[in-house]
Length: 207
Length: 129
Length: 258
View 1 (cartoon, rainbow over the protein chains, first blue to last red):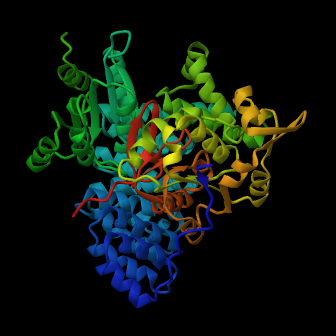
View 2: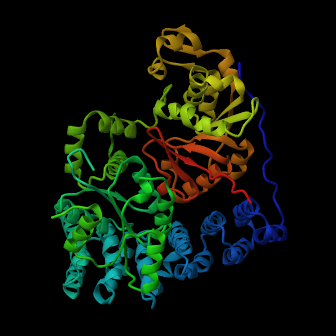
View 3: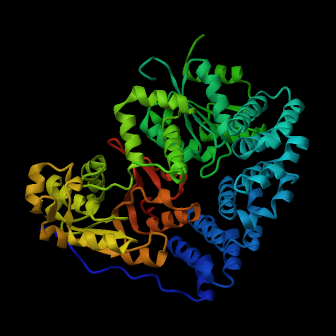
């Protein structure tokens, strides 16, 4: 019989002290940095170590592990530490930051009002996306001002995308007003029409 | 191309309404449309079914458009040779040049009208009207 | 199947997944498609709703892929007598790891050339107990030919068959929670992992942690197979995607040579 059975193999990783982990996070091989990033979250100063590591790390796999660990700590501090990467020139860092923030909606909530009026339109777009994971009533409340006053069509588009999924009848007038503000944007007109249709039909099916 | 002779376009964009908008335009123009919400899913769809043209947005989570394109162009033919339209909100020279380098055939700044989109896809798919 | 109101979300999710998979936007269109496409799509829908059912040789196109493609790749750089480690996680009541064992003995000409080690893990210790016991009913065996059943099982009575002791001894079972890194690390690294229809039940954070754990449990160049309605594209960017035969399979990238 060629199929063989063995006892449990390969050792579990040993837990390292904080300073050793910090050293590994910056100086180790990719595999070592990866393992360190994954075990640091439990330490009291874990977030600081992860934050520092993220500012220097270039390997995509290790970055991913750092973001996961930061998201798992899910404190307002973790959200604050991840936020700056929404502005990064590096698309993969922006994406990593967005995914990490998505994992911690409560920690992110207090930052959203500020992000939604950020001077960078790209950040405002990402902020709209983050609203999706907030409680539904919050989502409406946060995005209505966007529909009313946002100057960039693609930011409005991001808001409409989220409201099409989670918006209630209360946003219908805001959608209509937004459509009137951008009459020449073919995509936005389409998107608002779809959103209004979806929200409207849900409302009527509830009556 | 699908058995009914229609060409097949893959739309990769993380916004469902953008995909719906393109779908409407392209189906009206006689294309079959497949959808993916990020570059990874796009690559999977491309591996499972033949597509004639790909539309990909620059900004997507999990894998951005440029990374996706570079990876696509590094695969084997015929996959690597699929014509690609890149969409973006940026109109800068550098962005256009970067897209060219990554292997885009056309670069289009949003918002795009449905007719313009269909025209670009006709060009890339080699469809004369 | 009986659906209560509580299952409505589950049903909606499954249908939404099928609609997304077939790129069909509205339910009426999907329903029309279902009625016209019959065989394939209906099978997908049935699979989608019966993910918890397990039986021998389930999704056997992945087993075919294992011997035709994945193991061929894996042994490229191995020598005779080297280990091949395959993980079935979760293994539930054992149908999957035992299926792999039988399949290899039946379909892999090279099975004698390597040290094949099959490990089955699950978080639920009751199913592990049942798996170790190796007793199965008619339903579990329904995809196996009478010849295979006769050769690998001993019939105990009308309803129960016991898998041969040799096979029972050849699979190692262990209790593992895929989200707990401390637990997954104890299992070592594998050439191939089957992780079917479990990641869909995790929340986003757990799914991501589990994907990282699974990455750790793969040898560089090793493969992981998910359930055929699942995709790594919604879970993690760590893996490469490969198409073999008719299956989509994921791979931990091979080591880059310095």
